[in-house]
Image 1 (cartoon, rainbow, N blue to C red):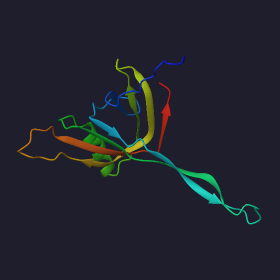
Image 2: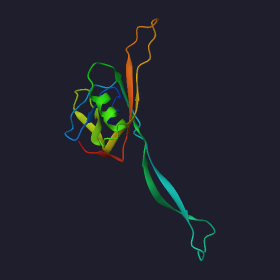
Image 3: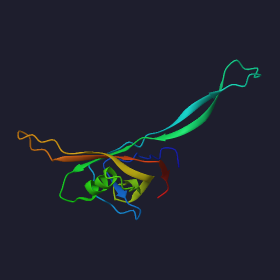
Image 4: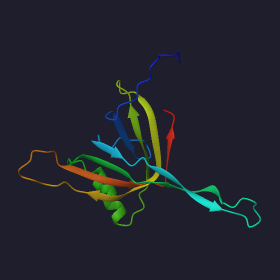
Length: 149
């Protein structure tokens, strides 16, 4: 890249969510968040170490739940998935959150594995407002990684 060439960051309003082992898109979501990943530090010091401080090793990786929000419709896929899990049916699904550019081309993909809905939140109602009724879900994921598109 030549000096002076500018690379603009992507905007956060073009994205899609794929859920299901076939990568099917369930619905257009208004919000997707929770792409937060941490690694626990593990301190260790051998008794004969000349250093008077512990070294830090990396420990367990943790992946935050994905939070998704959309306008509620009569399309029952998310509710049925939650109902399966709440009935004790093992229903783990893979999927991805995909960032798109201005021309709707895939740019970045965060793929999750073995996800299941651990929380479903219904809409709030207020007769004095004219907002869209929103449903929200949280998907527990075992692993998530950014992969090339």
